[in-house]
Amino acid sequence: MKEKQFIFVGWMIDGSGGPIRDHVLLEIENGVITELHDGCGIKNITTDRVTDLSHCTILPPLVDSHLHLFMSGTLDPEIRERQLTADCNELEPVIARHLNYLFSHGVLAVRDGGDRGGCALGYSRRMEASFPVQIKTTGRAWKQKNRYGSLIGRSPLEGESLAEGFIRETDEADWVKLVNSGLNSLKRFGRETAGQFTVEEMTRLVEVAGLQGKKVMVHANGVLPVKEALQAGCHSIEHGFFMGRENIELMAEKNVVWVPTAYTMKAYGENSSAAGGSVDLKVVRKNLEHQLDQMESARQAGVTIALGTDSGSLGVLHGESVVEEMKLLKKAGFSLPEIVQCATCNGARLLGIEEFGLLKKGKPATFLVSRGTSGQLPRKLTYLEDIYIAGNPSPMYRKNPVKTVLR
Image (cartoon, rainbow, N blue to C red; front, side):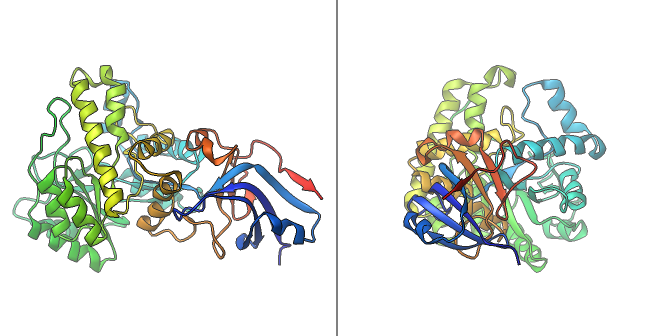
């Protein structure tokens, strides 16, 4: 049995959405938090050595609940085109690089939203035991023939139902990704596209996927595509631009998780010159403002929001964009504990990860260390002080020697 460890932190955000705690002493045994003491608890500790993080804030690892590992977010059109058409052998080094970016920004779990060749799925199955970022995958998404989504998925065969196609091409993916609308217009505010599948088709898919223990995430923008996905019993709505108040209330009622990916729209505005003249900045700004309004409404309605960035989209970089999405949650009226909850606990629960998401007794002592007060978040998350895994600084991240204080 290992000797107990003690870590004294200045501020702790535990991921629950509750109040920020200051001057907390973590008692750790075999990598698991056994007690959380307030500041006065340090007087009752008999050991002479306590790791001193009193100048830092700790929080659970970040979770990006929607990204695309095969794409880099680069503004270079030639590189983007190449990544869209490359095979898995060429893309695997790209995926590995993105996972390193994510880890360096404290993102220890992700849900990949699909790629045309199922490359992220194949890579994750071979590498899952050798890298600290947990990857939940969808493999190749499902879309309707001649509709949006060919860059990330496939369609049922002629005369084949959606459920039949899924059964025929069952793979080892953790989730099922369904595309049920088109993209948002960057030139016409609020333009909606029709749903790609009927409620009946999606309902049947949810049923057969459930028999394999899989849940269904749905790319959907607009009132009807979102409403139909909710009626079908899908488990998370991705993007959800222009879905409207009624759908927000229905999500709260059905306990469906929403992943808004608002930063994608902000990134289009910031990088409009790289979008080939297809962007009206006034429309992009209105799109973003509308999404932030919806996020505020969802907060008030009690919808569970999990942070997702859609990294790989134009100008949306892996790792860095998590902080940008957190800033937009703040702009939408979320408190710092609520923002951290969306970026940690809510994402971990959505992905079915038990190892982290909350800092509490009985959970692994896996957390991020940010130098400075909690009031400097989320900005300071762009350059972490350290990452602790099971009570110890990660050798993959170490910048400075462990700090201890002798009492």
